[in-house]
Length: 54
Image 1 (cartoon, rainbow, N blue to C red):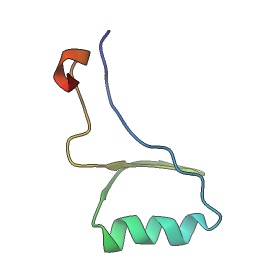
Image 2 (tube, rainbow, N blue to C red):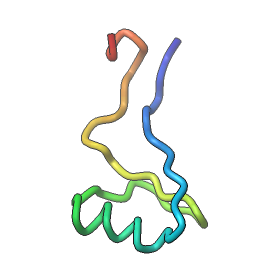
Image 3 (cartoon, one colour):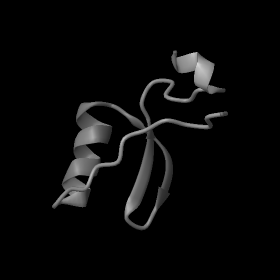
Image 4 (spheres, rainbow, N blue to C red):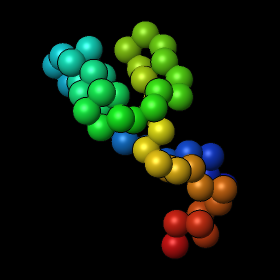
């Protein structure tokens, strides 16, 4: 199995406040953004294949 990316999905009541927290307080960089979805870099959470996480 080959992995392109790992991640976490969060459902929050206040999307804009959560986005500000992750970008301003935790300094996570936005990789991609669509309506209701923001993909952030969690410090190399990309694995070329499953053996990279074992």
